[in-house]
Image (tube, rainbow, N blue to C red):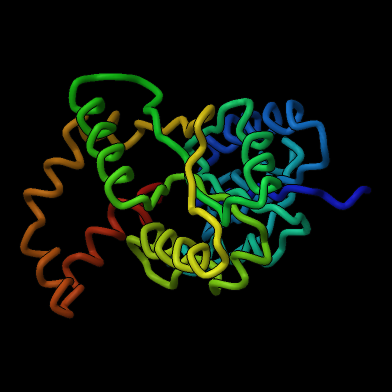
Length: 245
């Protein structure tokens, strides 16, 4: 087997409903790219058929039992054989030109890495408002998240994804951007492709979910900011680490 040029890392906790469609989107993008791409699904505390389905779809699987998404992604990066790393969450999908655009931007020598714009898989007023807030936040900070891309050596240089159970994406973007400044390269964002973002939590709990959470958990967030994260950790467990249990 040829050594892959690109490794796509997909963390997955009990994602038997979504893993096949995520892998299918990566395969379409790999076909458009035209060079070797490996797909690594990192099975995190899975008790369903995620691993079997991933393997049936042609992905390589590795396991990580931690309750930290940063560590799960880093396990996938450590196992990767490709020069270029792209990470995508298992319930999301990439558009068909994603891998080609990522590799083109990195090959230009002008980019250290970056993220991608986000589009929800369906639409409603609160979801459009959510998208708008994300776009404004990304534009103001330049810390594009959602789907990360960079060379493996770059992730290794910043120590991988920041070791945090929440907001690890923002911290990692900051680290990549800082390294880019030192090496004269930009931390960027895809222009022609985007992340197709799952609405499954909104389907379960309503399209105003994240707005409700922001207002109803202000106290927990403030306590966490001042060194008392217990309530906030319970919220993170409910929304992410235990969501598919």
